[in-house]
Every structure is written in C-alpha cells, then in structure tokens.
Image 1 (cartoon, one colour):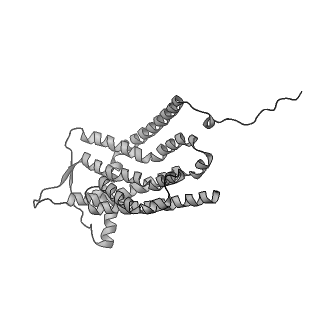
Image 2: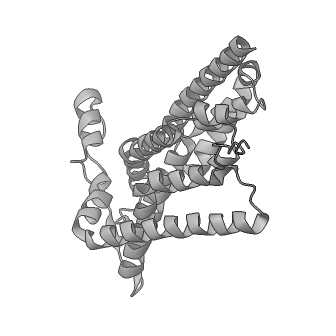
Length: 272
C-alpha cells in the first residue's frame, strides 16, 4: 500500500483566522510593550536632567545655531529678546520635568512605537501590499525626526523671539513666563510638526487604496494650500512668519505626495 502523501505546507500564525478577542489580546500586548519602551526612555531622559534642560533652553539665547546663521547671512536676530522663566507653583519643577521626560520618551521611541503599530496591521495586508510598504518604518521615522528637527531649529526660534519681543503698549515691563508654559509651547511646536511631516506616507496609503489620485490632488491643490495655512495657524503661535515657515515645507510635502501617488498609478498601469 502506498503511504498517504503529507503536505509540506505549514500554516503560519499570520495566516490563521483570529477572533475579535484574540485581536484585542494582540493589541493589548502591542500597547503594553509600547508603553514600556516610553517609560524606559522617559526614565533615561529624567536622569539626564542637565542635558535636557540645556537643549530645552537653548532657543532662548542668541548663541543658538539658528540665530547665529540668520544673523551672519541676513543681519537679523542678532539680538534675541530675553525673558525670565519663573516657577509659580510648588511642584511645577517636578511635574514639568516629568511631563517633559514623557514627551521626549515618545519622541525618541517613535520608531519602536510605529514598528509595533506596523506589526499589528501587517498581518491583515496582502503580500503585494506588504512588498510595496517595505521600509515604511524607516521612512516614517526619518520624516518624523526631520519634522521634529524642523520645529526645534526653525519654528521654535522664530516663535520664541516673536512672543518674547512682542510689545503691547509702551511700558518697559520685564517679560516672564512659567516653566510649564514654556515647555508646552516647545512641545506644541515640535511634536505636531513631526506628525504632519507624515503627509507623503498618508498619500501613499490613500493612493494604494484608490481613494485619491494624482489628478485629484492637483485639482484641489489650491484648497490644500488654504487648509495647510489654517493648520499652520492652529499649531503655531499667532505669528505670520512662523505660520509661513511651517506652511512652506507642508506645501512641498503635498507636492511629494502627488509624485508618490503618480508613481503608484504608473506601476498599477504597468501591472494591468
């Protein structure tokens, strides 16, 4: 008698059908690992207090590289308005230090956080979608850190200089702000900038899903410019120069998104 032929095909965990509760359990572990990494990085940042304070306070002084560069080439921002940082509440130093450590833990841990997110959604994609999105974690992380650096080195100096030097009336009062307010402004300027620099990635996925086309993005380019300036006004202080500084790279990213979607359409046409 001939022996039954055994199939060599193995079923991987990604190919198994998971129930709703199993998906929740998987999501729970992704979240736990992500929170754990943020906590560990936050503790490391918390212990490096002197370094963090030096980096955080750097845009206050005219020795900041951005001020020096603009002063040497354009002759402006050679004298940066000075202001005091005060502590209004008893626990403000500690809680602001704690909050800053958490935010920096999220920023430094962004590649791992996105990797965990990608691991969660990847099993639900087709093979050609996985192949097309190869290297997406590296690209997203690169765009995020570019956005954060842009917010820190470009937007923050202009915003701080404008707000500290703004005059209301003719009094010679000393400008001062609380530590919590200063950290909140720095967070508002840097972290959202890193997120909105993901615009080409969003365009990539929407283009792959067929929800947008390059012709559509070109047609609504003027509407996108208006939305970009509104978005820049929301996430930046009320300064026209700062809004313009963040709107310009966003319009460039929108154009990159058009190129990305056009390449997707070209590749799809070749496959058809």
